[in-house]
Amino acid sequence: MTSSSGAADIGRHFEKGKKNPSPASAAAAGLRCWAAAARGRRLGPPPSAPVRPAAGRPAWQEPEAAAARWSATTCSGASRRSRGPWTRTWRKVPVLKPMDLMVEASPRRIFANAHTYHINSISVNSDHETYLSADDLRINLWHLEITDRSFNIVDIKPANMEELTEVITAAEFHPHQCNVFVHSSSKGTVRLCDTRSSALCDRHSKFFEEPEDPSSRSFFSEIISSISDVKFSHSGRYMMTRDYLSVKVWDLNMESRPVETHQVHEYLRSKLCSLYENDCIFDKFECCWNGSDSAIMTGSYNNFFRMFDRNTRRDVTLEASRENSKPRASLKPRKVCTGGKRKKDEISVDSLDFNKKILHPAWHPSESVIAVAATNNLYIFQDKVN
Image (tube, rainbow, N blue to C red):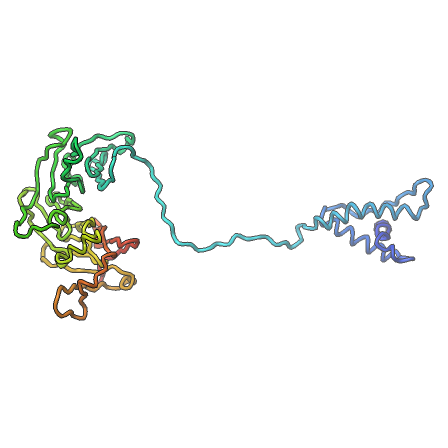
């Protein structure tokens, strides 16, 4: 066959070691070389046309040279590029590694260059167009669509900073009246302002302050009376303030004294000296209402948080920790022993951990779900469903 004779001519190059190579063995060697080259380059059929001898050269030498040239250009290329559609090759497959869920907040707008001191409060107005931001000395009014300028509505900075006697600690808009807001001070007072009276609310419309008992006055009286948080009730009739030791509920129609006072950790009154030395007395505890305004919640030390029922006048102390935060596990009430013999379920005041504290609680506006932030942990609890 013609193709066999051509392959035999090529195969003689690989059968040079033999003196008299058989045509069959030479043809087989040529076909193997052609098959390897075909896989790499997808060549056509094997060469079969006879090669004419050159002038002055024996006829038996010319096929050897042609086979050597063909094998050097084809077979060597086939060895370098032997990956074809029928060749099994190894490829690196991407590996999916499980990682913790990362939540990243990206700002849509940045409102800058309006405060000199640290911002302590932000409250969105009921008109859903403006909001206020407060620092120690100023309260600014912003429009949600304007980021480069704001309007100053409260400024208590004196001309001489040595005359400064109080700072702003918290501020919030009324939930229904867009022209009314309140701000608290480090002296334990709350001022209610109306933006309809004047653009700059230097003068308040109402002033809430509880008279101090002279017999209980001490070195720490002014520090523990500083209000750390103020919150309107959802109905807008009441207002709640939190100082260091208690939570007070005010009626907006009565400025002289609060209608309710709930002691959060009165057992710490005897520890004020040590709390002053470790700066815990300056901690800013927040408070919150439930959806129906029938209960309030605030934080304490040792990862305790307190809940007060306004209707039944009952209160409970709960603990947020990893040991008792298993799924579907019920929280057991905790009690603090102030003196005498301590019961089994009680914890002594001296064993409280003041590095563990809950400063930021939150209550769902319509469901029995609460969230408390304890240092770098967030705990979410739900009322037990039968």
